[in-house]
Length: 537
View 1 (cartoon, rainbow, N blue to C red):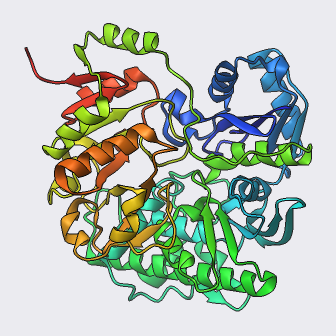
View 2 (view 1 turned 180 degrees about the horizontal axis):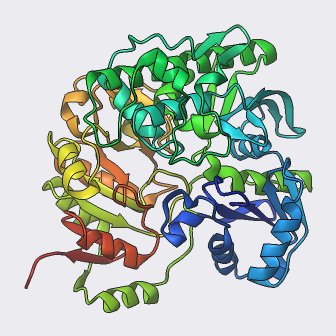
């Protein structure tokens, strides 16, 4: 069967639209709408361009699609409305089914985990009237949801409320709170707002925003929260110690609640494998603690754990329902293909002089070893919020001020924001405290001495790094680059961050890579076998 999973904006606040195509149980294409329309989070947007991209990539038409599955089962008219806009944009609407928002999250994680059985947890702000769901996953029987969590008791909304209070954008900037937290101390008692309890956790909704229909540009916090902890930070104000401590205290509360919840689920199910999805699952610092729990044998976080992953979950859940044999993925590079002709056309349109390189990995490794900041654009784009070696900005992690250089002259973002190390899989255990490889940059790990001193640009202030392990089979060119860097520097890792600037989606097309290159302080960029520099001949 040709099954299309979609997610998009039938209401103005829905975000992270996208589409995923599964053919006979195998993922063929998955791309987020934001990459194609160049609007980050694609709020209130239908997945028109991402559907078109999936069809082009698979050489199918809308008439070849057997089934469309979408989340939003509590929206009574969602199937009718989807039929209408599909006919408007594509001329035809295949059969459509709807599933629960959290079922899609759970499916996106479990069916790609390769586990025979697992406890599965979805935790986010809210969707279909819930903030979370707990299930037992079985490779033969599927997902059995055993408990749901009300939207009024929401860890996701708790963290988003703190995000808003700190002057960041809720629903988008929660990772900034996570990055800021280690700069403060968890000295503020937030148990009045959010605390662990034997049943998992409890969040008091009176501290949330009072209007469910409010946008992300309005405050998420209520006056009650101001009365408790003082005035919120305006976005242009300095980040004083008070706000750093609030971030640290919120992170501590989130971690305590997640540990309590997962412990409760383990006691309830006895399952030692954990699959995690939902927006809260992108909190790498919390995942570090969850992965280290003594009763957890294996831990899988869906790489696009937030609502970005809903199209994948919808497609996989529908495939299982209809008896398809699901083939787990071994990488995340399922974006559209761009031909050599399209790349050369982008170079010609922009008038860029490019040098054709026989071995881009070898040449890029020289630049990185010499301290240059390199744009790396290769193959099909990765899905999810983190660049994993196909749409990346790369640098030498052993240069002490490299983090500050990239934040200031390339990314144009806050100085406290950390960068991730991409490390050869065979070397990861020597450098990091970790039990298993971590290819999707979803877990922070403690860095062993003396590597914390050898890799200062990717060592966060709390001595952790959001690790990406790279193996030769799933990402051969990126693996070769890092191996070449190791031969030149004795460091088996590179600094890896997404190929974009603050506030913009990761680059998708070749012309966007060129535009970002010339609009930033990048030293050079490699687009397939072409190298671009800013040297004037």
